[in-house]
Amino acid sequence: MAIASLFSGVRVVPVLTIPRVELAVPLARALVAGGITHLEVTLRTDCALAAIEAISARVPDAVPGVGTVTRPEHLAEARGAGARFAVSPGLTPAIAEVARTIADMPLLPGVATASEAMVAASYGFDHVKFFPAGAIGSVAALRGLAAPLPDIRFCPTGGIDAGNAGEYLMLGNVFCVGGSWLAPAGLLDKEDWPAISALAKAASAL
Ligand code: 3PG
Image (cartoon, rainbow, N blue to C red; front, side):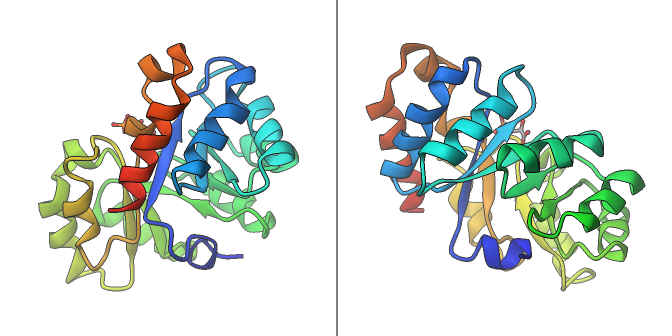
C-alpha cells in the first residue's frame, strides 16, 4: 500500500521517542483516544522495536510506523516488529532499493531540497518528509517548491508544533505534518496520559 492511501485522512503524525517499552502501549492508547492513529516510533531508543511490537499487538486502532530509519537493515527489522510504514530523515540508494522490496510497509523518505525531492521522485517516491522544516525555510520554502514540483506531496517535520501546524496544513502540497510536540518527554516521564490525549485531541482538530 502506498503512503497516499495509508495516510488518507491523516493530518498529524506524532514523532515518538519512547524511553521504556512499558510506556509504549499506554502512550499509543492515549494518542488514539485523542484521535491520532498513525504513530512514528523513532529508532532512537533501545526499546524502539519492542515498542512497535507492543503497539502492533495490543493497540488495534493504532497504525505504528518506524522513524529515524538511517540504514537499509532497519526496514526489515521494523517490518518484522509490526511497523506499517517507515520514515527516514534522508534517502540513500540502498534504503530506496530495500524499501521497494517491502511492499506492505511504504517509506516516507526525508528531503530538504528540490534536488533531493527530485532524486526521491526518481525512485518513485511522490510523498516525502520535508526535514528539518523549521530550519530550511518553513512554509515559505514549501510554497516555493509547489510550482516547480507540483507532483510532490510533503510531510514537514522538525520545528512543528500546535502553534504553527495549521499554517503548514493549509498548503496544497502538504498532506500531513509530523512532530514530537504530541508526546513531550516531560509528560512521558510523568506518564500523564490524559495530558497527552488532550494534545492529541487538539491536534486532530487541526
Ligand atoms: C523528526 O525526527 O522528525 C524530528 O526530530 C521531530 O522534530 P521535532 O522534535 O522538532 O518535532
